[in-house]
Length: 440
Image 1 (cartoon, rainbow, N blue to C red):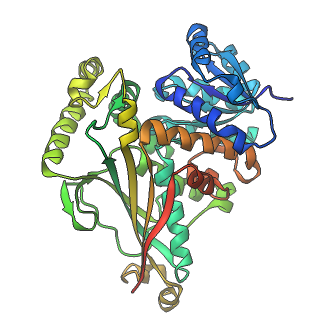
Image 2 (cartoon, helix red, strand yellow):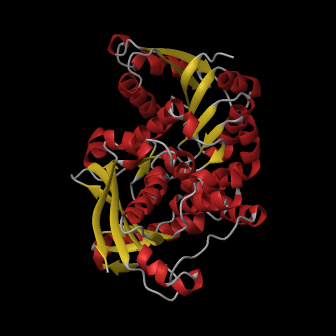
């Protein structure tokens, strides 16, 4: 059946959803030259949708794009199925996803609509993978989670780094360490929107459910190649990045692990498999004062998020409990313009020559890797500038290269490993680069 819309943005009136819709308007004509693109603007409030559409630049500025309002509410299954029935691809931007996401995933599978989202909630996306992967495969639908800053830079960054290692003396990857830095160029500081904070509160609150889900899913252990990658859970100074570091406590490590587990567990995904690798991730903090503030704030947050009363307190006073970072107003245009991010990947592997000397995988565990590489993924402000760019390019890739994207409920590295997504991101200022190569 012919679909009415090429792309539908669900949750378009939300803080991030508006940026996503604007990104579609800005880039669709160049992505689909000579084509008329039909875009659905979806949400539950007709009044807010009309206000949004009326606030957009004149249609004369994008003559090849047709916008249509769609009323869809996760509490109304009929409206969700109707939206998905009419859409080729859907960008889901309505969160928290653990409350609002499953109805969208289910409707997309039922109505054969391909899907990308901007969730960063491990309990949600791991649960969807566990519950709906086989159904999505049977329906030949691609459901791809974490397609914003969470977690395409990390997941595709690991894939890119593996590929660069393999180009260096045919190296087999052993380990990758990722260091995330937030760069503030001006005096306005960094800020985030309440919706992001709300998802984080509920995500930390569901940690027990996530542990139970992982026990139930019983996914395979990722094989270890080479010596064990040491990890340091305590705050410490790392000279090679000139910063204090703490463990990366957001979604990226969960996503990278799930990407590797999926190709081990599902034989149908072997064609997109890449070598397993040990992975650890850290957040870089530039000064001891900032480190102390971060430890204090995260300790209070972690304690309160365990309890219902604490969650209510956090959600009632986001600005207070985040030392002014998160609010209902969100960042200013100046803050968005002055913020950027970088993720640096330090990787080690074994050259083909060394592997030929030690053909037994067990023997490799006693040998030091002889190839190392440093790569980077960098871009603009992560939450509300980079995320719209990234998820929109992921959606375009689904439309333009679906034949290269497997069906199922997938992570980015599994879904997009054979596509031009990284090239598309490069064109939008999300830069993947090799910083240094070393053979020992």
